[in-house]
Image 1 (cartoon, helix red, strand yellow):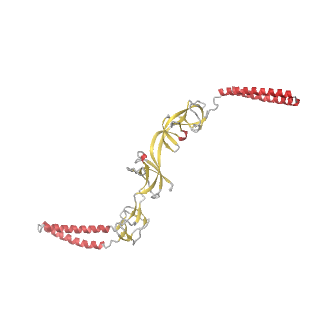
Image 2 (cartoon, rainbow, N blue to C red):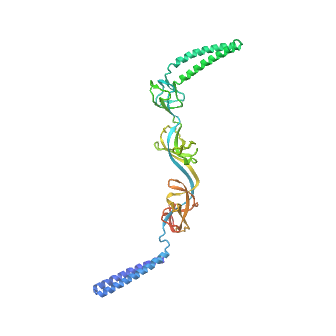
Length: 396
């Protein structure tokens, strides 16, 4: 407090001198004597120089006594361990394994289409029929011949069981019957190809070819069937994450078009690395109870590829780098009750980054008080004053 009284005293002296000077100058000016004017001016200059010398002495004393002068004001936060779940952000497309464009197995005219667009069908249900080109009449004739061969074989077998006739007659009758039966079965298999049945339960999404059109086996698309119960997202993952993205990893799926977020997990990862783009495929299932999720929707994925239960996380903005490429932060040591402490630079090793925070692997101890605002303006060993701590104003 002493230096404050000194400043007040100097101020009073200056004011008083100013008053005397005003009166004295006025009287000298009224007198109008040149010699007197010059003498008065010289006296005032000497008084001004003396005052300046006294002010310098006061400033020097104040500088030695006032320890808070030119101390940077900073804010700090504490490095406390917390759970760090790092996520890998990717993009993928919604698809389903139960999405198929059906083609016929037989060449001919599409004689019947038994379903319409939007109709739900069961696995094995008849969807369409292709003209068999007379195969039905042929199978009827073959069945007559097969029935005759069966009767001949049965009679020959009874005789053979009674040791009547030769073995060759029995074998010939058996061979003829089996040959005819196989011919009938083969023709029936051909006729079966003229029918189009649902490969799985689902919905007829589109009827592509109309009744009466000529179709080619394996080429002409007849209709598209889809099942929305088994939807999943397929995404390409960079190969450097092959050890991190595994089956069972948690995933947050964002479907921006639908405005919904789904929590799920990785169901399958490919064992094959694509040499063209150095990625592997991951499948993420998504529930679709209301059938709102459609194939080919774009999805944003956040895959949990790394977790640290006791991570020290700090803002990326407080980290600096020296000429050697080392990263460092400033901490506060020896902080007193008045909030004054010493800034100390510590070299840190960083890990993974998520948003604006980064993981510290080494260099910081738990509970260290790290300089936040003002970190770019302090120096190692400099005195600093903490004005806030973890966003709360310092009481001191």
